Amino acid sequence: MFKFFDKFRPSKQLLKEIDPNNVPKHVGIIMDGNGRWAKKRGLPRSAGHRAGAQVLRRITEFAEGIGVKYITAYAFSTENWKRPKAEVDALMDLLLEYLKDKEQLAGKRVIIRVIGDRSALSDEINREIDVVEEYTRGREGLTLYLAINYGGRQEIVQAMKKLSEGIREGSVAPEDLTEDMISERIYTDEVPDVDLIIRPSGELRLSNFLLWQSAYSEFWFSDINWPDFSNRDFTRAILDYQNRNRRFGA
Ligand code: FPP
Image 1 (spheres, protein in one colour):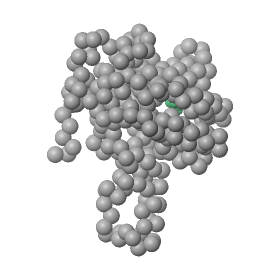
Image 2 (cartoon, protein in one colour; image 1 turned 180 degrees about the vertical axis):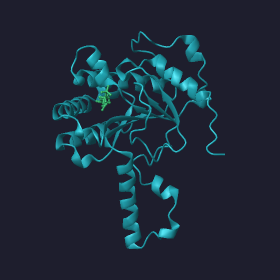
Image 3 (cartoon, helix red, strand yellow; image 1 turned 135 degrees about the vertical axis):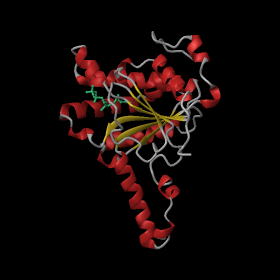
């Protein structure tokens, strides 16, 4: 299960504390703090994003080992285009590099799907997304949803556009609209709502991530920058989650 060297790997004792019957099915991760991690080391921000991508792979494989079924990782938000062009270009280059090297992105067992508005991504990135989704489709491990040019509000708007078409054509009556109809039209339509959202780096906000899916999510925050995030940190997040009392409003 722990093929990858991790100097902060959880002790056997800590791992034993995980209740296999109460592992969150779907974990969302806001991979924050890459820039600060790089700055501390006198490196360009792009080095922080690169280190963050490596951590995503390690955490994805570790999460699969403890029974998580889905991870959604916020790789590029609809607002990230406002960053300096050099940083946007470096992030797009990194994404392309990882998409091309399918094993580097998530290992051999992970299914990869991309969510977000793909229309603003380059043809080359779009092509590689199709290739990697097809290449990993038949796998049976965890599914990693990479959110690229993703925004929760934008996701809801595109679901409403799809529903409006049905209304215009007469196949959906406005008075018959249900929550399920929206859940079926968002990007993560095949996936249960997100159980746990992890945000490192000390920021305490959702930043337009999985707005619809997070109605009853648990949150786990830490001060650690994402490139320093260890398997032990992930284990702690899972254990904290298992100590929460989820009532879903009841
Ligand atoms: C936020 O940290 C992070 C991002 C905007 C990008 C996250 C992307 C990655 C980790 C790379 C993903 C790539 C692949 C191939 C999976 P920040 O830059 O805002 O950090 P800061 O708050 O410290 O400045």
